[in-house]
Image (cartoon, rainbow, N blue to C red; front, side, top):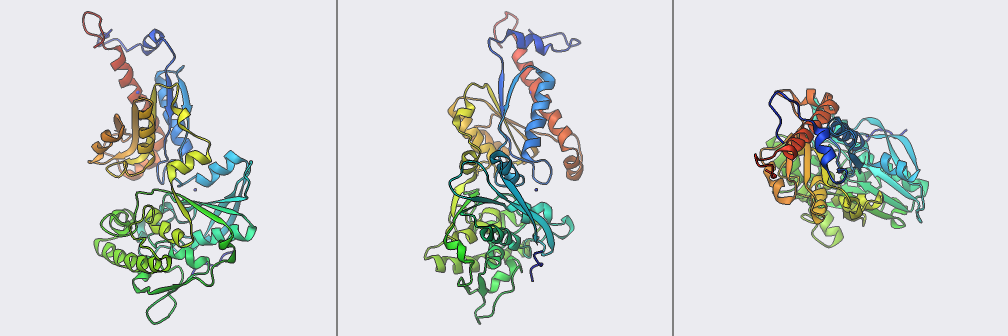
Length: 421
């Protein structure tokens, strides 16, 4: 049962490169735009942007830097939106992903909004960082607490709910969220499936009773900022793509895939359309699917986030270079993640793009095809992931400095007759 409700002229080899001399020759000051995402379970987006700026300015102290930290709906999303709009955070105890009480929050936005808007952040209540590393098993984690936050916001009288579908430690399709809002999932005998029992329990689901849903759900607009490349079922679905990352064994991945297929059938029947491969249905461990059952609009997170923060393509004007960043760069990055979206827009303005990442996968070369011109890992030497995460600020700052030094070295290269190399 759920817990009780009570975050980079050739010099002589022995002569150091005079980067300031290179800078003085420039016809206009170098302007760099930093548009990163956060590093999951390590650095939030604001800190990532600050570290990159610090590394750049070790090489070019007078460079013009503009920072536009981008949130993928994950950790820090609610706090940043509340800060931007001068709103307020509401703190309360809810059910965490492993079914024990945790303190979490939702935000109520300020500013000139025509409707009273609440923001619920998946990472703040069911994020992977909230699941102990020694007990990670996405077959049993729950989104019940997400529903509890939504319920509290509804009780407060908001007219609009924005759900940040970012980092998650769950794979229950949003069933727990729905249960917290009053839905009842039933097996083939009409027996209720226990609330907050995780994705594995959905193997038995045969129907859903929505008669007990919170009455105000019919009065509010629900919008989710999510990765619309993620789908609920199949080879590219929640279980098979993200299950292993969240701790599932191969056998558990199979069971979870079976359970989510059963769940998709029930939700699809209720909606009158197949949602198993609908864009965004697999966002945040399938939370997108549950939100569809509530009539939510699923929006690409870059599109949504840039709107919320008042960011548009004008951001890319009058700059020379773009830095982006994310915790991991691999073949999944082109699938709607922040670095891919930044690169797409930077290329519209003919700008070079460099990406820094906590780790770089062996398949990361796929990112060259989407407009990322160069990328680098912040890792130094053979260190464990745990050590790297603990020292991530220094590693990221050093990496940004290193990249800028390479860039300035390239800028200073000349062939013997003095023409550009």
